[in-house]
Image (tube, rainbow, N blue to C red; front, side, top):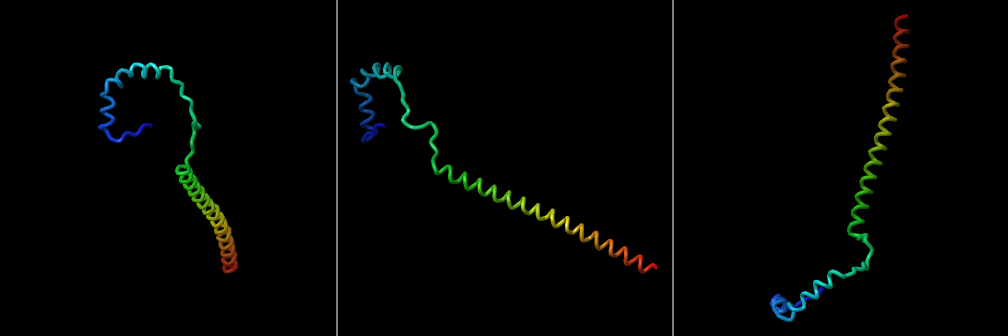
Amino acid sequence: MVRYRSKRDLLSMIQDPVFTAGAAHKFASLAKNVAVPTRGLLVIHLGHVVPLVLLLGATVAAWWQMWGALTTQEALDDEIKRVIGRVNLNEGKKNEKGQQ
């Protein structure tokens, strides 16, 4: 990367006849250019990883809480059905005693 003092300097360099004379060599060298990567192809930045981990953790926590609530609700429903069944049986016995 090249940094120029100003756009004016860049334009004056491009318009210089010496620069345009070397343009043919520049394009010829690009055809035989061998690019060697100096970094890995996959660069993991913590700015991307941390939010994804937090989002995943929040999703798992919400699922865990929902699953626990469903399990608890099912257990409560079973217990209520069992108790109601006892109450109905006891009322039936009371009614039978009252009719006798």
